[in-house]
Length: 152
Ligand code: FES
Image (cartoon, rainbow, N blue to C red; front, side, top):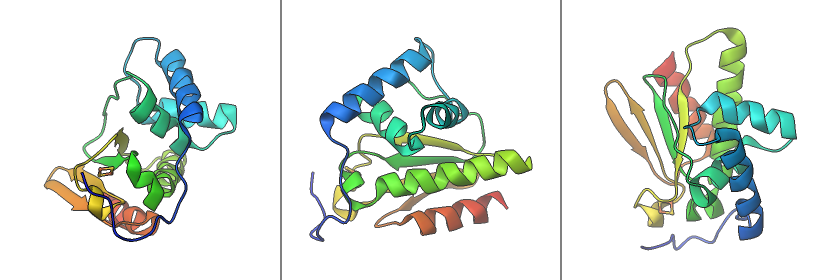
């Protein structure tokens, strides 16, 4: 599994923090799968970034994620953190909240520990009714633009 030859642009969450975030998500889930809205609400209640809970879920929990919408943004929250994955997650969940508040069609935000294209971090997949677009060396801005384009 490679890593980019580019220097890291961001800092990863440390393992102790991930473990405690993962435990918070496990408590929230209580043995059930969780959806994007539950994690957005947990982050708002605890005053932490949604991206941190999503990373904790991906890397330090056994919690499953449930999808509820035709469009699913799947983000690598593993080593891709060093190349901006947390920014991608926060931008995507900000958009999610704005759309929820405006009553617009929503999407899911799910996470993986790796999407097998590590040398092209940050990596995500935008899965929609017409197929899957893989986004590599992506940025928060590019992901927001792609989501807006697919959701209308
Ligand atoms: S760490 Fe492998 S694709 Fe992100």
